[in-house]
Image (cartoon, rainbow, N blue to C red):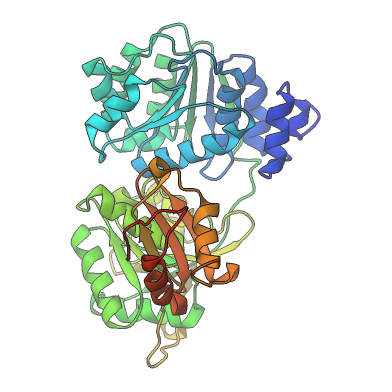
Length: 453
């Protein structure tokens, strides 16, 4: 295949037109390698890193082959986390705009079971979900996959890291044997190859990691006594002034403690870990994603599946337990041509030799302490108790804010619309005023309850 353009593929005119509208022009390496095979109904096992465009690769493939007139589940995509499942579903819906009435359903744990049951009664064309919740529906008989054409296992290495192998095998036992299977993984460990051999038929192996552009990340290691880590973390922020940062701790307790201590020092921070309810996770992630929070404290498990497109820096407050974990952590910065920073604190006895060739081991004295240093949020988040179920659109919310409320378009940041709630980022100095005026007004002719996070 000579061309890198999507128009060189056997795609419908409507699909190509929509891809151009949403900014998909030239294919990434994984798309160029995988899409012709997917469109030709081949099974593939592909190694591609996060952010390589793999979601669009399998998404374009399954949407092109989908028959919208046949209203049953034609494709199933399994993801390791709820957050990743929602991101994948969102991207699929964006690509699916080329035709009407394609129903994409997200089935994940952490959400009420029975509303999902009701949605499945009306069926869907594509289901994106996590292994445990999908398996629960399959066992209950509420999810019919007898007509399935394509099965996608996304980020398979993370699935195995999280102990999902048994659930995955059970899910596969419900699927028709005659199907297309696509497996994507950032690593090619023996257990990934074994899993691929067990679910794929004459699979074509694809590795694009060597041709993908590497993240531009400056890695710095600092030797820090345990009692001074918080102080030196603040010094990193004051020296390098990142717009936002993810700080990794090895325990939930430490995430909470560091977040609280940073807030006490006028540095805006939130923690995310496994003890949070799903609605609490959503609130935290939306605020960090829309710049209403500058610093996110996270454990490795809680951060799996997070895809923050513009992340200034990553800090390993605690040394990761394995090199692979370190790679996953710092790989969240320096994406899409941006430069990123990765900082790691270590102590005597930590295994740092494996990082000697790729990182700078700097003197902690280089960091500059600034008196009364602050990191305040750029935006505040207003939550509207209404969403897709109420047929709210971004244009409706923006129109209300720039109309009756009197904001300019530049005062409004990211707008995230979910099934029953919408989150709106508004510049910090305008958020309180906007909340008060919007509380008295209407959106799309209707009053909605709302509050500020």
